[in-house]
Length: 170
Ligand code: S3P
Image (tube, rainbow, N blue to C red; front, top):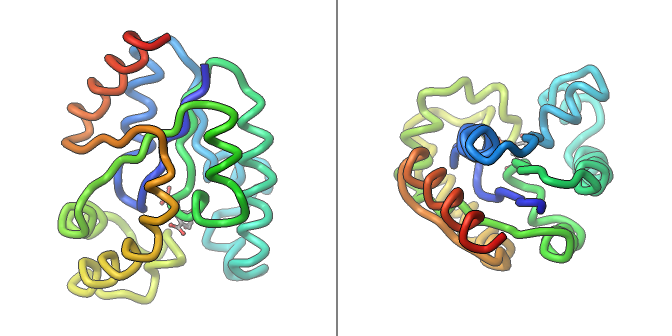
């Protein structure tokens, strides 16, 4: 069994993925962490040095690499579903779950983090987040909506829902 968590930055993919993996005795992989460890550099420095297009190629290659793992929960970078045929690949290789939070919820959560760590948001003031996210989601939802399942709620509620889905279906 292989589960891909998808959703915008700040939606809780990593936090939720770790809870679910622990509860179900599965492995947890975060694609951004995987890339950072493998290349020994931060996502921000990859964007800075090579640009977004190159990052998307690296992301794609590593997504397919981690997707070989069995019995894993994979938290994907927020942009991953929106490039190449990454969504189709994930749908073919496992169960995709879209963590669907509102721009308001995402902005509140992201406002407590260091925006400089996320190149797409790095130039923004915290007060600009909600509008920025709303227009980004308007473009990204086309891809996120290709997920097989969709969940909303707090991190704990979503983790519980996913545990129940997995227990019922597998
Ligand atoms: C990105 C999301 C980030 C990371 C990169 C680009 C995006 O991952 O892959 O900064 O385009 O939405 P998280 O969603 O884990 O923050």
